[in-house]
Length: 124
Image (cartoon, rainbow, N blue to C red; front, side):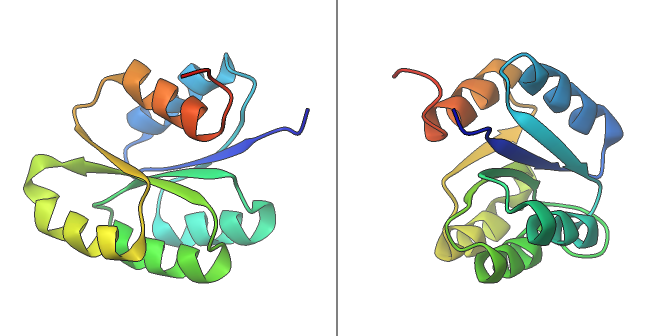
């Protein structure tokens, strides 16, 4: 079976590590980025199947990163992670095509199951 790649983009190390830990048990390869610039470099190298993207980060915000991702990898599954206060940015993200969004604090298992379903690694 083809190995699936997941890119986790969040400026908070705790969230990156928690998500990585959860996905390690699923057989998905994970890559981590702490900002938009790192994320875009990884997208160019790995072309991940799925990207968990934080909305609010220093430098480029999630919408700006998403805009670039859509140029580099138009078919990537992108799921946004947002704080409740960032709803207006979500509307911009929706226009660029996100597959789903999670509001922080999110249920880690809901995120895992949603990613696995989108990657067709979990029966619905």
